[in-house]
Amino acid sequence: MDDLSQIAQQVRTCNLCGLSASRQKAVPGEGPARAEIMLIGEGPGFHEDQQGRPFVGPSGQFLNELLASAGYKREQVFITNVVKCRPPGNRDPLPEEIQACSHYLDRQIALINPKVIVTLGRFSMAKWFPGQKISAIHGKAKRIDGRIVVAMFHPAAALHQQSLRSLIEEDFRRLPEIVKAAQAAAEEKPAVKMEPNKGEQLSLF
Image 1: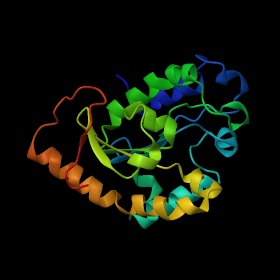
Image 2: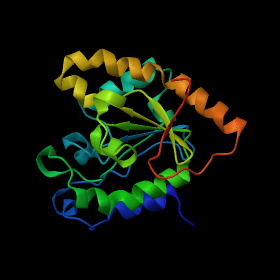
Image 3: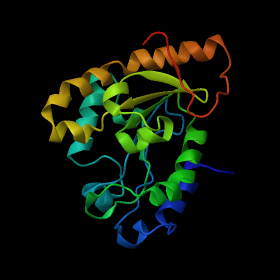
Image 4: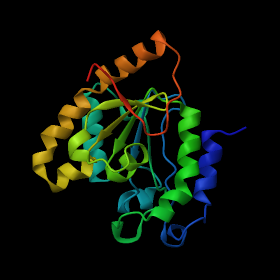
């Protein structure tokens, strides 16, 4: 029987790609097993690699503020990344590294079964919105494969580019509205299996 702790243990001992050779600690992710919201970033940074926990550096502190502005505590959401080990020098994760980690992420999503998936940054966004630009679709909720997925800027983007801060804050403040819409849609009709990545934009947004 698959469970989150089993996946976490497998992640911590994983050597499916070269990132295992340079990591200090793998970062499986953390949060409630039945979280309504799942946040998926790109990969661990320096602080995450040291602690084995996601989003604990400066961008993590900003993420905590963003969640609070939407009325959520960090402990209420599940937070993870598309790659579970830090890419050296915080470089972008490579396609083969993302692929090696993908089955861990897919199993986490299946177990948690969140109402809303929030992608943070372009690498997690690409899993559901291939070829799209974050500047064009950020904050827009879509139903994909029976789930509500919304792409948002990575919190780190605001730390590097202050002009994005208000955009990110505005997107996060709409999270309760998106969750409520997801709940209403689930109650109205069973989740419809859709073609992969053929997203249906919610009419409310």
